[in-house]
Image 1 (cartoon, rainbow, N blue to C red):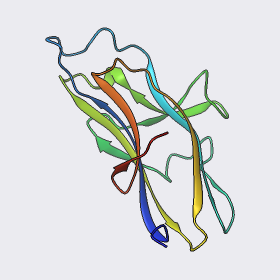
Image 2: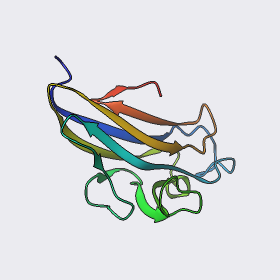
Image 3: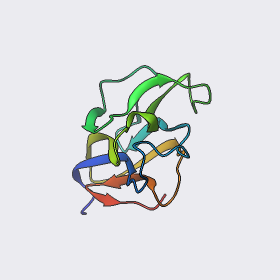
Image 4: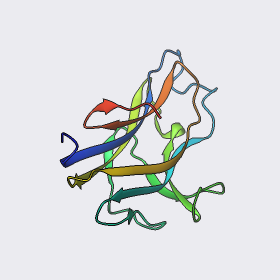
Length: 134
């Protein structure tokens, strides 16, 4: 089974630019991910409301941050990609989680909110670098 073994789960916010000013004024609000849970055969693994150590948050120009969010899905905090922090003509905010899946496979679940101005920016979830339809 090709799902067995180590996998890299990645959430990324990508801004492609295209405006003459450094920050597109139409990009308001934040994009966030919350309630991340992996349900492998061995039992649930849930990333807690205050856990900012399980995920790798340092990738990209403006990494996701664990911050209080009024409309968090569970608890009071979410992993937030600050669109305003990408103050260049383009950039990314990315976080990832290295997981090991057993022979019975697993199910990943999460809540996400994307504040986007298509086609200039996108929020994407990928497994081992392959974008997933969600």
